[in-house]
Length: 399
Image (cartoon, rainbow, N blue to C red; front, side, top):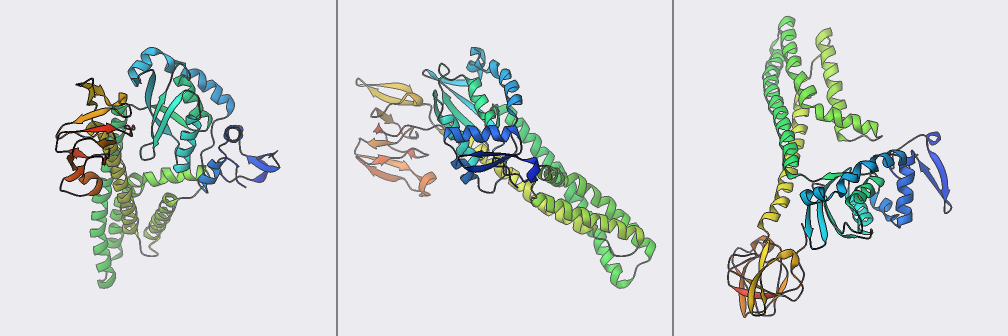
């Protein structure tokens, strides 16, 4: 039977049963029960429909949450806010990494729970890297309360530190690369041994020579299985711990059985060994994980890079003069002058007779696009070729 919150499977006698509005509810722990009531009281029952068959990690119990809340008081110190947040008028914008996000339903839940709080102006969570941008008024809701809200629904958060994130990503890349090199080296050598074994199978080979080749294959397959393939064993362990079986478990289980059988066949001299199959399976699937990790890292770098190409200042007409203004302070219907080569900081209505825009990042068109007067010019990554003015409409959103 499943827990009504985390959807993990338990024996019926291990679950706590309660009735609510004529509905039977089952919970594996006080943490799941607490989070379920928080969501129900806040009107976010739709989270479970969005969650589908996805399972969650059971949250901490209320008693442990209370002890953790006391640790967040340092977040409210002005020195901490000045160092780790960006002040925008009377509000502060903080970047967080939210741990425990599994799917789009988790994004929806966090954005709606936080967005419903008085004092939180804007919430945006990126699913690719679990990075959240939150604009809040510290006079109404302190930063410590935001952390407590995230933990109360079963997730955890920490301040986004670009240098720390980069170090962690580089460390993971280095670890994956070393594992990949070890796997390639050992697998390539095992295949040479396999060629000799296959040739000996048809042309004849002494048992002593066969034992030597099996020993070398076993020695080469061992680091591939237990060093390169350790990610599969770790993932399989946590999957079993939380009650689900994924692809990593199947890879680890299948490779381990093949390795054990081959070891038995080599020792007992009772059959053929398949050490090369173990190495190839682990290496091929690990290569997919390696490429996936690099792709995610590149996607995260691209998203962070968007902050670098967006303009931070724009030229705004005021009383017949041009003044430099922060893009965050642009108001609707202000007149902005765009110089050649600059990027639009917001959507706007073209005021001059025409403008040439570089739209290839939006439409793929390599040639400049001519926009006429009173046409709407889009934000995103449109670069401009002719000096002109626009009347601001939709303001720039945080990425």
